[in-house]
Length: 565
Image (cartoon, rainbow, N blue to C red):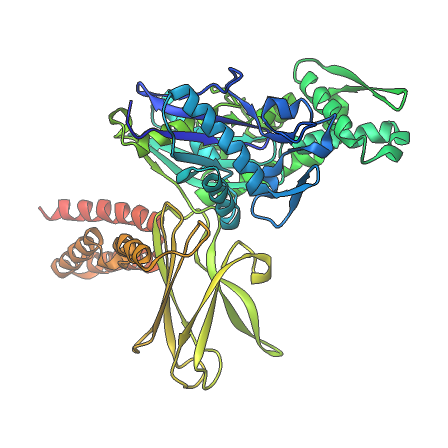
């Protein structure tokens, strides 16, 4: 066993789990109760002592004022949740849970644990990811990597079935829904695109069933919100029972009266139809961004506890026109993948040849202004790095001043997909001085560089001038020291070269130029068109597009050169 043991943690909405890489495989770690899954529930007992996991879950319906669940949904928000007379942020409750998972791992391994990989929904924005990392640090963990949940499941599946294939990971958990399109080849697990809905999961199906129960027994509405936790518990039981039978019944005793419900598959489908409909858009978005069709997929992989529902599996089968696969345990797949990532971080020889690529879940850009009939209008979003771009990445764009005699430019940085910045997540801002000239006469080069570990550097340089500014936005809270910033900037240098300046692209441009010199007439014109397409791809700074075009250009030049021999 490595002296430096890294653990992989699936911090789930409903359940959490821990895995390690040992003996050339990912293994789940049992908690103090001998279970591989720890309910993501935190509470207090009647004496005010802290409860985590199963003991807290056992009191959820009977002591709702002393218990909290599903707090993952509030990560990165200002929302506070109560335990008795105390209030907590979601990060703090998550830290309590993570600390328990860490202690269970230490007890199981018999050694101190400091380093961890933690999974997050693929569609978590930067603020939410920062919150997860904060929770880890509050729990005494050094969070080495945040790993997207469907990517983690794909890692576990990829090692289970090591062959060239294209598939979609459909991850519907207790609180979030993620999809990722995966291309696996020659030991590479390449995430082509991700999408999702951070407010869609098994909890929402419970809520829909609960609403149906209230509609059936409207007299119970007068007892809200006191009766709500007990109703949700019975709703979850109905959902679970309908995974194994076409019809199920539950009853609830409340204030000396007993209430009874019977629910069948058809009625479940009707009351959950809006939720089923919401599953389609993220799937189609991910396929569109990956430039895949349904027919390109070899199979669909189901992950997450909510995919046990026949209703969900039937919906997936209808959407894809095939039966999905569920080779891995739906509640364990993400944790097992986190264990694989932990092994990769430790550089274990058994998986040293496995390469994982991931993508940006959200676009990054700056606020800009546009001319409108009423004059100059600000508040528009200008993307620099678009969603589902491969990581790490560095891209630049040129902007100009918008007002006469402008002496400075304020760059506000956002993350999201909204056309206007008010619909996106604010990340930070920086100011750069400019000479006072006419509108549009001062040009600025803005460069965004983003790493796998979530470090965003923004550089702004006046073109043909001395003025510049630089900002590093960290995923973790707190200020970086000057030494840390300098170290990070050094790490980013390799990403800052324009694609035109990279050796493989320079060589191909030179090869095309030499061939152009050798040819005449239509053949020369044809080579000119081919190289123009390649130059346009280079100017886009889209690495995926560049790679595709470069391969086609190489094949075209090979063919022409073959005729000249």
